[in-house]
Length: 191
Image 1 (spheres, rainbow, N blue to C red):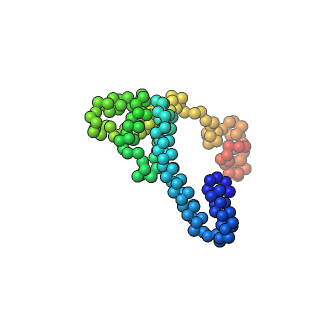
Image 2: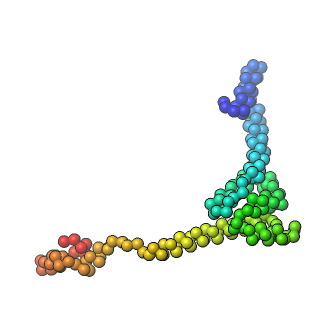
Image 3: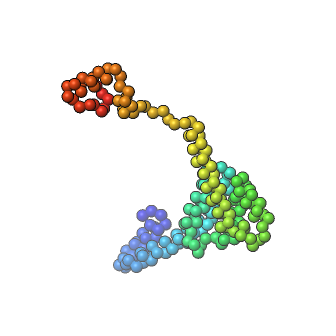
């Protein structure tokens, strides 16, 4: 058995054999439950530490999206009652986003607002981050559409139907022969 948990079970088995005790399930379950409880408690702490160690995003769209997704992922790992307090989250978000070009007007508005203003809440700044990302994606899509329209439609091969409508003299002669001999018209365009 590997790891700390495996050695604890091996020690329990060895002790039970050495003392001629029968192996019971309850102590094993107790070991599993205690191990799981420790992991759950440490998981929340590790996730919270990871949240506070996040680097500030750059001003480019990909960096903002990565930052947003990372925050969402970490917060999703934390039980709601173990998440950092809203004031702490708003300060963290402010510190990480204050150098993002697209959010400079929002940051200035926060600086000028009173301490208890809505602009200083986590929800306010998070919604502005979401808005900047959505608007940047819309601008990117719009420029992609405009670029496609500037290029114009793609040239495609003529469909078979157009060939039939403008048959060559050779095709006309073959079609005339078929009609005389009683064969139905061909619609595939091949003679």
